[in-house]
Length: 145
Image (cartoon, rainbow, N blue to C red; front, side, top):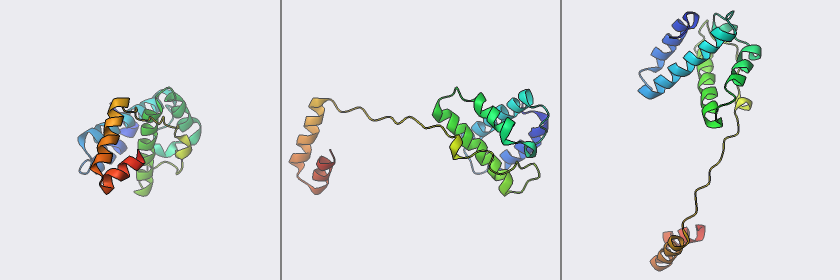
């Protein structure tokens, strides 16, 4: 359950997005906001509204709290929370936090995975098929290869 001081704001926010987002997206948003507010209740019980948030210690503490996650998961959480904050600010809700609590510098570099090369025999067969096709698209693919 979402901690009481934040529950009304989060429920109102989720109701606003519910008609346009997929159910899994809504579950992810709800889960992230619950985790964030639980972190606040455990580490900063004095915070009773998103409008009281500060970069330090609240946001930086949370960023340290999720530091052990893989970059893709961590970045997804940061982006979702940043969008939540930006929506509250844009909609001019009284509970809106100060602007700029999260930015692109908080995102971790993500790993880039290259595809595995084709096995040699399959690669040669593909090249031969492209040469034999002798069409403009096939020759373009061969050139890219």
